[in-house]
Image (cartoon, rainbow, N blue to C red; front, side, top):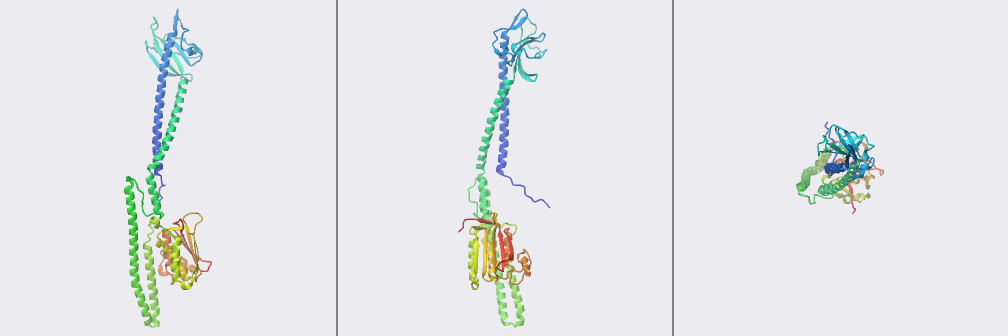
Length: 470
């Protein structure tokens, strides 16, 4: 058998919010990476310019005396004279190796910068190298010194610590601002999505209102994009109600058309009963009984026809005040059974509203109350209350003081689809109709003995809503 389990429902609002959030985070993330790279490039370019200036400072202080090289006292960058300051100057030659270093580099163990590499006159080279786990920016400049064949190479080393700190501060500031921007844009996006999807929420609320019986059609004004949907839904609701009403009317007319010929036949049988001898009356009684069964069968099948199981009766539900319906039924039954002097005890929740067709509720309560009055001795009790769980389950209990329904017949009178001609005479098929209606609303019905000695019928509906009382 194919798996008919439905996929879990998802939220269109959540899906759009997640999609936009991912796109926003990717966009701002790429923006942050581009800005970070641009900043690093800009800072490195600034460092290159500064080190080139330091090379010129080093070159201006470089002097020679009888083949001995030294830095003059007029060097303008104090960090060259400060030990381990992080800024180091070197003068080297591809042939002679290191010629001179600044005072700041006396304790540093640097190998010659790119041995064998010759920088031509005026050539500049900027690079990033690593020595003993420490990164340095290096700017080198080739200078032809007096009568030398190969140029001297003036090199300035500077640690990347200052650069790294500046980049770290920028990154912290950048991602803080971008994070704040993401949070703000997500909040704005959430508000805009709620505003943009508000018509869909109104549509869902209107459909729930119709389902609960608080309305009959979609009355809100909707955007053009939803106009075709809402108009067609309203048309569908109106068509469904008209078709349902037309169906009921047609079946009602059919029932009346069938009842009239049956009533004529039954009347003729009564007339014949007075004229025929007593030996033939037994056959007339059997014919009369079968005519009554035909009436009951027609009524039962018509009730089943207007209540297909595939359509939930609450799909186009209307609110019906249960206490009012009970009063109308009891008022009518009081006139019918006036000779019994009915003593009726009521305990109904006045805030209970049945969500469905009023005629269905009247058929259920009217049938059960009519049986209680017909087969009881005049005392009956009706109680209606919500379940303790606070759901829409509403229990209606009707008790009488009559003979009740025997145990072997309780299953028959409640069994849906049972053979109707097997029911005993006098009990009819009323409770079978009631059970069919209650089941179509997803409810339950139970027949038991009453403490009063008669029958106890409990009907539990799951489509009852609390509302304001009268």
